[in-house]
Image (cartoon, rainbow, N blue to C red; front, side, top):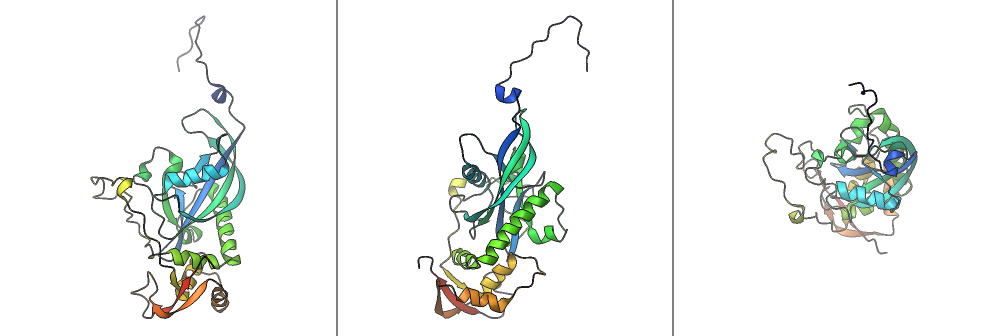
Length: 287
């Protein structure tokens, strides 16, 4: 650095008050988004640095608005995307506001969001988004919990809290599984060769289709099987979790929303693996 010339006058540019005096407390909304792919649980995390997408809660919006805006920025079909949202608690962290000198301690309200079936597509080119908090990708929860996918230490507590909140809710109310299956048209497959990842060989020269011509996937017909329900329930928990399948089946059958049908169906996503079919039920949400 050059030493200042003695006696010279340096003009200091005026700064807006919000930049001149950093806020000591910045409220943010952290959104941990889960989805089911290939009968396993996946979580949407920032690629770098690790963590859930985060949005500052401005003075003119509520935390709920901030969560909705985050989901809208990340997902293709945000209006009907979330099956349910769960508040996972407040956590503190350091925040640096993108494009500003403002920084300070953040209090983040973490929301766990389970996406409706078939609504887990990212917006085109999102992996090259200039804002790091929106540069995201799907990660396998099983690989994270078994140490096969390394996470930054700062995100461990957030993800553990979100997972605990989600799993506790599913345990208390397994009928959520039935509602999810009734909305599912087909089982989405887990694959590293995602359509939105244009960095893959042969993808860089392809034009991204405008969002206006990309069609939202259709919902299911309301019909499910108990074999699918058991698979989906298992997907929310670690592989070594002991689950009483007989009791789980009784809890499913006790639902007043299930109507037995005189037909059988193959298990979605397992048509080639499972050499049998399962009794079909229709799930009614308006009873």
